Image (cartoon, rainbow, N blue to C red):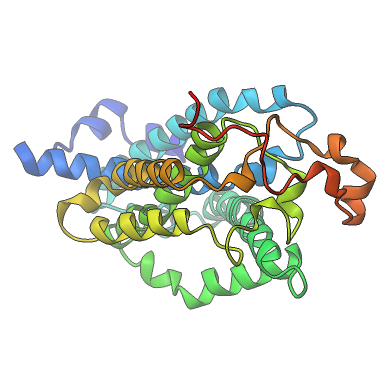
Length: 311
């Protein structure tokens, strides 16, 4: 489609024909809102990336991401801008959805081959990036009733029908609002997870215990009230007003701060360990069988240092 855009419309005309129609503060907030919508695409993988990296052969396998992800997003963004700009020149309207632009093509063969990658990309991205993470989460919540495959099917039903995505994609503003809106929840998720691992526990966690329903990370009735508090404090204020234009940054910072402070003032001592404990340390065969050797789970964490104490 990019080749089509450059052939049908010279790049100088296509990219320079349209200019910003707003200025000043309104432009600034619109720019931040657009940035927040773009970050929404990253937010899902920021939270769910461990679902994929845990299958990596080694730790170095993940280092390609900082190079590939920005390049891929920049190229796809440029392609979208170029093709949409060409559509404005040729059809006199903003066809923000590439499929709507393809509908205007008279060559049915070209339309088929241009649409096919979108079909494959939709299936591939939903199976890998969307339903896989949801399937893992549902399995963790209800392992007795839901496996990863069932979780993916439930996610497909909810996302494909219950959320009425055809209404979200009815216009560009609705799509941008959706992309910006769900960062209200994903921002705090990412902030709490990063803060807990790097600042509270300083990378020293008991990995096998995370899969033990009665292990050190059960907290109170299966809920970490510090995380719940951080979510409640964060989500409410990010709904109204202009703050929705930067809700990812605000929710991330606020949730991280609230969680860290509450964890320091009211530490969950049973969750602290002296060093990182991996499956190999606990006995991989036991972990695979679902049997967790209790000697590796010093539930009280008496010997582990709590952040803020004795430092």
